[in-house]
Image (tube, rainbow, N blue to C red; front, side, top):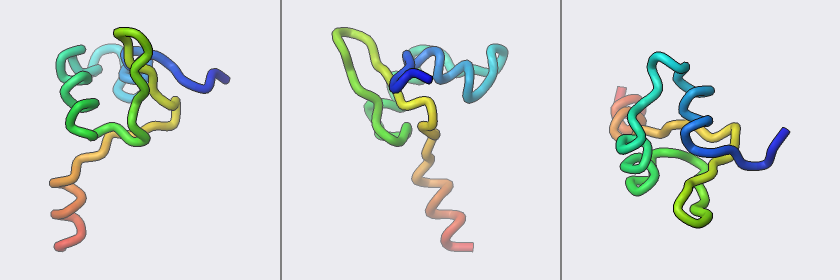
Length: 66
């Protein structure tokens, strides 16, 4: 199994081909720190750990409050 995979491939594996977010959304998530562990930029492409997860801080806070 590869150590890092391209961000687009991670999106397909995480959300499925039909429901994957647009590339601009993926890049916004990277810059906002919503993918953990944080992807690495190599050249002009982002690579991410295959076990990385989407993290929504607002949802996490709401969950802790309830």
